[in-house]
Amino acid sequence: MSDTTTKDIKDYNYCNFKAEYYNFSEFQGPKPGEKALDFDAFGLDGEKVKLSDYFGTWLVLETGSFSCPMYVGNIQKMNQVAKEFPDVRFLVLYIREAHPGSNVPLIKSIEEKLHHANRLPGEENEQRTIIVDTIDGNAHKLYGSYPDAVYIINPEGTVVFRSDWTIASEVEKVLSQGRDEIHKRDHFEPGAPSIPLAFRVLKRAGLNSLWDFALGLPKLMTMHKDANKAYGKQVK
Image 1 (tube, rainbow, N blue to C red):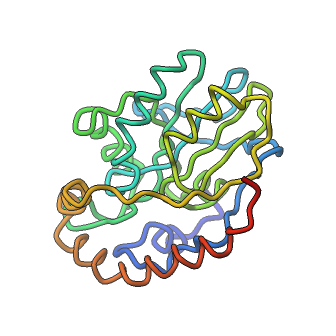
Image 2: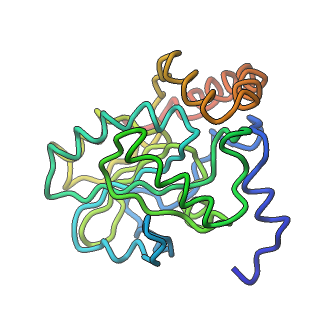
């Protein structure tokens, strides 16, 4: 992290959510058919790990955070998919807080990031293996910087499927019917989490998190609409 300035870290771990921090029409990161990019991370115990530590078996890698309603809304569905495929290793990459607030604020240290990540098993019954990104979000940036993306990686370390938004049914479909294929389509229109769940997650982060989300919602809706148009001609 020697080349990363304090300003870079603060810019990445923003204080308040704004829709313009994201670009839903341009999905960066390794594409289907390309090799997965290795990265350094931490286990929940703070011990260093690498993504390549898990190569040699099928992997499902999802990004998420404690304050992200999209990710939290998928936890139980993805836990169920994980139970259906015991030969697959399911990983959650804990990234920056999607909707930081007064209770779950901007991350200033890896210790704070680990603390937030460690709340997931108890408070949200997250049963998958959680690995925690570096404070400057190196892995998150390598894999597209989206708040709830998902990748399926084969034992040789090649990406066979990715989606800018995690759709549990699509992950299940690929694992059960299409592991030997390279799936070029990588945009799926996300289903919004229930209003009660979204309210619970944002309120838990802090009332200002709710306010920031409400302010950004019109822009978010426009961005999702534009992304759907941009990806409208993708191979299905």
